[in-house]
Length: 535
Image 1: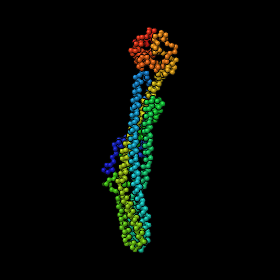
Image 2: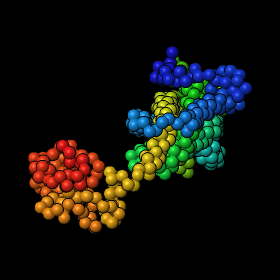
Image 3: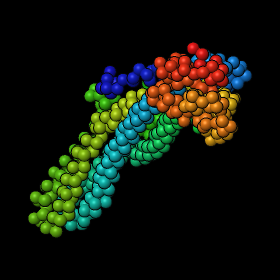
Image 4: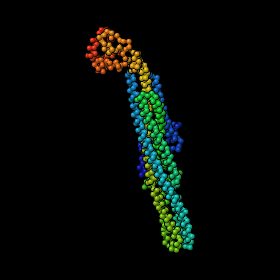
């Protein structure tokens, strides 16, 4: 149909987003045409944001129900298998949340970069188009100014010089008519100044908004990553205050993720509505500024379409050629008779040469290929890179919401396990000899314990008086007792070779040296130690 239609084809995801329901706040279906000025269309985009807000409400409600069940429906935490199961569940939940968060951040960085590239290409194309229109306006204004002021001034002085020659005066009048004709053709060109200002304003505003959008998403991505790492650190170190802090930040980030999802979906749908039929929207927007033939010429830029400026440029060219011929005749025939006229004639010739050079530049700038290329680059930047980046940002928001939802489910369980571990540790009997805390207390206060030491008696087995322990017992420190017993039984520090004296439990096995020592004990010594050394 046209070259522009062949070069630009809206991507499939814009058609998919274009099919999203457009409903105003009164739940009335609307047309899918891109009409950003209409209130109903604005409400249809706000409705998409409200859908995301409803998703946030459902998410928070599910989390509240889960936390309520976790607090109210307590299980028997004394069962070891239940503890192991809960710990495994928390571990896998933390791993899943961390992986999903890392994937979400990666997707978010890519989407943010793609969107920024698309918007940059849009603003770059707008600035290029603005530069082209500014060049056209400058050439038209300069040519008209030269014709109205410079040419008229020179023709007036030449009229005074050639007053005695009617044929020369008639030639000057003909040149004045050609100059007026050129000015008339230039005035017939569209008012590019208004369009130039609009493009510059749109480009500046778009670049300003995009900068803060890019910076905001960059901070959100960094915040999500920091919260995820801090939560994993809290789970690893079992820090309750860090987990509580990350839970608060997790809720805020969850709300932020759903809010960004709503904004991204609304922006993507609105942009897709434009990308599906951009020509129609631009024709409607410029109908009061530029004629539809000119807009159609630039949007489609087909060789089969007539150039709307061709007639004006042709008249311009012919008028300049005619004026140059007349100046050449006056230089040839009038200067010998009126030497003072040579300076004005040369000035007019220089002005006409400059106008001809400006005509060639104006013809090149008014050609559709330059502005059409900027138009297509802007469409590709917005509809391909821009909308694709928004879709990746939507995916990032969903993944981040899932990651922080899993994290908010895992943190309370981890917090309870830490609290239960501390409570169980506090419930241990201080008198339990297997309690490390009790051993430390006993080692610091030896007078509080009085355990029998087999070493103190075996060192003097020949004496009956050594069968009874002294009033002050030997140090009960487990380390010193173990070393003494190791020296007694061959110097091999192995727990299976050391009888667990004073601990109320038999050893798992006896070495040959220990058995020989036991057999050499007297009956009184055996009765003294009780059944601890019974084979």
